[in-house]
Length: 253
Image (cartoon, rainbow, N blue to C red; front, side):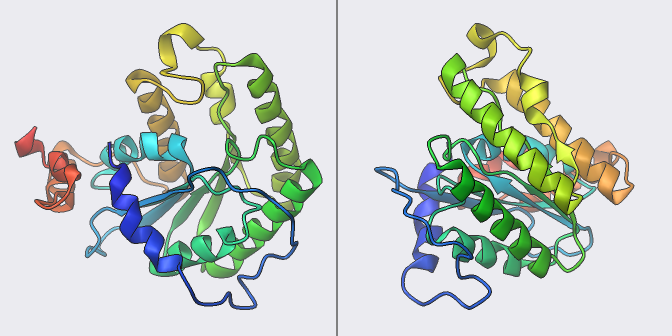
């Protein structure tokens, strides 16, 4: 797992004030979780020959991000920003703005939801609209996709995810943003086979999610899969001797 790398990233957001653009459009009283976290990787960080994709989400995004990188190897570079912060969190927009400013992205694939299940629905909708507005303002013409929140092992929690997805669907229809329906992809699967706990998925399900995300990206770019040689070269270039993703180098598998 790649969790502890998040500490260095989190320090970026300590101190400083929000710009007018990054101020929450709607101030809400939203309690934080006992531990809040951010995980981010920028694969092929120094490369610019291919378009770059930004994945935004939570631990589900963190779970499929490496597989997306491998799916898109040789076609696009991947940056991901995964966080426990609800879209209503007072610093969510500042965190989001930081990653939006890091690169010029061709595609942005966006989700927020599983850490928002207990949020006031009106607050969440207002804050989701504010996040979409910020993404649009900073996207520089990137193609934007919304990803629906995935179902859970618990039926009552799944019902809450459905509620948020319905709200998000209304927002995205207004914003004319297409949806990558990961909920519909996962919901028919056997909870006892494909879930590792209440929220998270085992390997096969994560690969299904990654393929769906990568398919969205390829469609947005009008690109097919890279050749085996191109993909291997991109993965080798993404490898690092100082981090856990050195395994991205096929020679090290």
